[in-house]
Amino acid sequence: MNFGLETPWLLAGLLLAMLPLFSSGMAVNPSPWLAILPPDPLSTFVTWSVRVLAMLTIAAIVLGLAGLYRSEQSIERIGHGAHIVLLLDRSSSMDNSFAGQTPDGKNESKSAAARRLLSKFVDQRKNDLFAVAAYSTAPLFVMPLTENKQAIQAAIAATSTPALAYTHVSKGLSMALSFFDQQPLTGSRIIVLVSDGAAAIDRDSEQKLRVWVKQKQVRLYWLFLRTANSPGIHSVAEDPRDDNAQAMPERYLHQFFSSLGVPYQAYEAESPDALQRAIADINHLENLPLHYLERIPKQDLSNQCYGLAMGLLALLLAVKFFEIRV
Image (cartoon, rainbow, N blue to C red; front, side, top):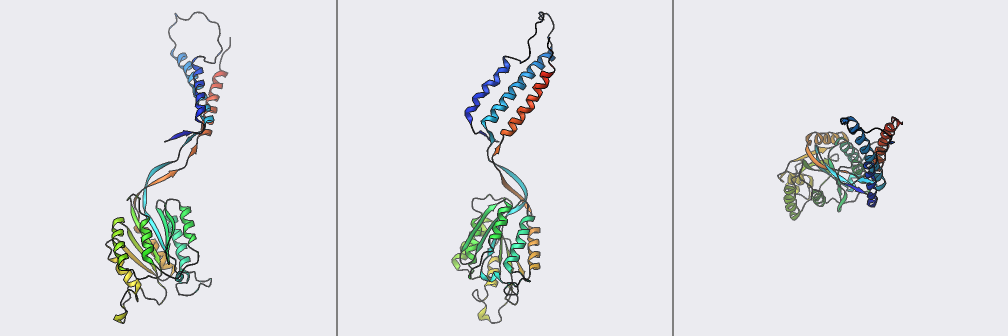
């Protein structure tokens, strides 16, 4: 533990703590010469105990006046959880319902359902570190990895802003992977991609993502919010000419993720209930031991010093009360 003082020069007052060594504070009464009597250990112990109490009292008062504090520190904790990056699709289609229509009050949008269920997911994960990123035309940095659940909830709520038209998933994944830079490799590293569509990834981006995913040792989960009657990740083109990444981006993105050589799981959710089951499954699977640092803010110890001084003064007053005057 690291301690500090707001006003260090007041420590000079600790010299006053030496005064009880020269005076016990008790009344001096005339008495016969007692040198011929045997030593009295109990009396000696009481006398020095009173002096030590007086010295501690003065020291506690001086430390309180000097503003004793314990500086900010980090404590290593061990729990069960993971480093989780929530990567949210903010394309305009996410603001439609699972039926592909504008929400009318009865059916919530895919983005609203995702925010609601991800918020519950964060509440359930007590020891995880979370980060939030989003993407559409460009990647959006929202919140780095943190154990502060209130900040994460605010970050998830902040993604309710109006969405844009395009989906550049490769840029979003690159930003999500960058969140693990300078982070110790403890527990699981997870990226949870939440999207209702995909886009073709160029060759250069594919190669970079393959290298980065293996370097970061991540686990990838794709929550594919499938719109009713739209192609799924396992759909097969009826016309061979349509079997390409431009015509069937979801199918080819799924194949790309499957070929990365890292743990990967895809979920097709066609309703809020299906999305809830998928998130519950991830919550069950990812529960490995996790080492993380908890920050403890600076603590003012002045009140504790004054409280100690008051307690010691009470003891000294009690001793004084039992003093016998002749």
